[in-house]
Image 1 (tube, rainbow over the protein chains, first blue to last red):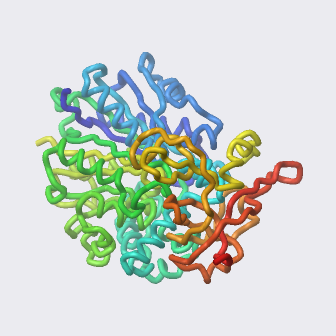
Image 2 (image 1 turned 45 degrees about the vertical axis):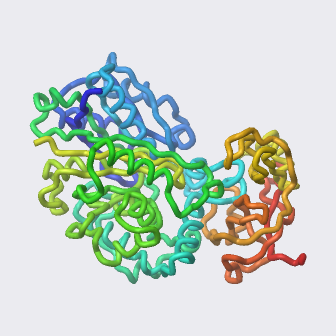
Image 3 (image 1 turned 90 degrees about the vertical axis):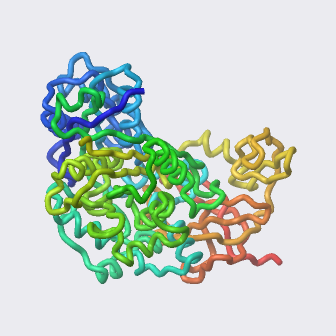
Length: 385
Length: 134
């Protein structure tokens, strides 16, 4: 294995992009990443996406991507792992460059979710769960997270309002991110008043349905610096798995896949949670943020919410999360999310995060969850000094 | 979502009788069937109908439903821990959302899950109601 570095990043704003389709989203993010890397072509493109077949009627995104970006000669295909598709594609790119089989790789994450009605998109997203034994019962993806949140509140004695600081802090950070879907702060009172989607998950517990694309360019670390003055090294790339359906997990409040994924990543990078300067976690729902903090070793079981209440997840806190708004405020275009997390982490490590810059950062971690926790993919990134 | 008739037919044993499996090696009850015991990883293909008695492990009342389930909102889904051990995802019925509690004893009943329009199939399956049998 050779070391792998990120030499370019690009992203579209996350929004309801009524005026552009999936191909133009890919084009905008991909070309931005090429410009940032100061190169004109790549050897391969791996596309992370979940729903293009269901929503746009467009599969075969790899071919579409290289065709429309005029990357003639590049190999390309799509990688799917539900909401973790973006990070799964990044892991494929990491393995391709790390193994020496491919030199320069673009990893694209893209999702277009707003061309269908809310109920159709909700049904398409539910396909991340067990079709025969969860979805057939009328369960939505939100409801699976609601089942976990309800049990968590029951077992550990938290109230719904105790979760408020997760979206409050995410929105405060999103307010300074020009690519975020939501760029205005929210209050704890607004959180408390939000309408219920599936009890106890309200509108402000949940990340929005939206469109977006993000891209990174990978190269062997040994010659990354000849291409970009501030490359970022991938110190770890790790996947953990758990049963697909929540009902098949021994203890649904332990994110086994996140625990396995985090431990593998820490071992690869030879670090522990205390060495990290920030953590871009998968706050698709407030309960997932709490469970992720516990799984990654920042809080004891049942105590993840305390970190939010104490402000330890804010930019000045012990472990800043969602530094550019997270899934809640930047938005969660599902197959693109893992790449947005990495793009934002690279901006932090290069010192280009603007008003949200965390001072003196060297090491950051991203964690992307597929489904209700069956696939969890972790990357640890380090500024190359 | 279109009706998937063959898929509904294949699942009839599970939907109508809560048919699971029992592991011949370690005796663990399994639902849904998976043919490999999750406890000991050995083959487990002996079918067994489960009692349908259990308790609510957690629940949620859905106000914003996926396509096909909107006419039924609000409805309550739960994870039900069966007395034999397995946990089932299912709707609760015959109970108001505000009366549902974690730990509440429930039992399986057969109810309509959804329809596929005027000319389509009606899908039946298990739901759980507060226990009336002692």
